[in-house]
Image (cartoon, rainbow, N blue to C red; front, top):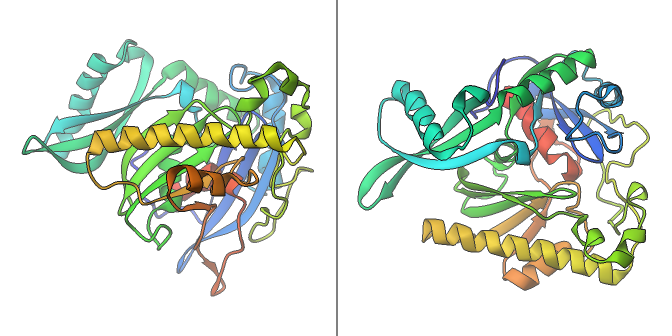
Length: 361
C-alpha cells in the first residue's frame, strides 16, 4: 500500500486521475502529461449516496457511485489517487534537529508516539520535510507528520476494489491543494492562504513563495448555517441549499458528467441565510490567519484563494475582502496548456481531485 507519497510532481504514467469522495458528490479529474506541463483531459461527478460517507464506506451503493463517477471521467484505466477526510487523518507540524534524511523516518515515528494518543502500531505514518526553519537561533527541520488509522486505509483500498478500480495511493488534502496552487505562476509568489470550502468543513493552508507553511482544518463549511437555527432546516439540502453563481462551471477537454451540474448545490435561499453563512466562513478564516501569524511571527498573508464546492457562494469573495482587508480570488489560473493554448476554466469544486491527480504527473 502507498499512503502519502512525498509531495513532488512525479514523472510517470501518461494518464492519472484524482478521486475526491465528498459528502454530497464524488468528483474525478483525469490529467495527462504533455511537453509543457499537464492537461485536464476530463472530469466526472456523481452524487454520493445519502448517509453513507464518511462513516459507512462499506456500502455497496457507495462503490457503485464511485464506479459511475470514475466512468464519467473515462478514468477507469488510469492510476487513481484519493484522499481520506480530514477528520480521519491526524496531522501535526513538528520540528526536529537537522539530521540526515535516512534518520528522519525513525525520528518522526518517535515524535508520533509522543504527540498522538493512539498506538503507533494501529496507524499508517508518513511525513514530508517542509524545509529548514530557525528557532531560537538554531536551525531546525520543519516536518509535516501525517497518520491515519491502518483500518481506515485498508477500508479505502477495499472500497475501490469493490468498485472494480485500482487505487494507487491515498493522499492528504492539504498536499493535494498545495500541488494545485504551487509553481507555474499560479500564485505569483508571496505569502498566500488557500481555503478549500466544503459542506461541513474546510481545509486551510498557507504557502510562502510556493512552499507549504502550515495546515489547519476548519470545522465550518457551506452548510454550517443551515443547522444554526431551526427555521433554516426547512431548506432542502438534496436540492442544494444555497445561492450559487451558475457561470462557475466549465472544464477542459472532453467533459463527462453524470447528470450533475459541475458547479453543484445550485439553489435559492434567502439573502439573509446566505450572508450569515458567508460571515461564519469569513470568521473562521480570520481565526486561522491569526493563528498563522502567531505561529510564524512574520511574513503576513498577502492574499487569499478560495476553492472547493462552496467557493462560488454569491458575494463570499467580497465579504472576506471587506472583513479581512485582503484580496480574494476564487478558483484557479494557469492550469496548463493543451495544443499551445491555456486550458479552459475548471470549476473550483474540483480542486482536491485535481491535486490528487497531479501527484503522478
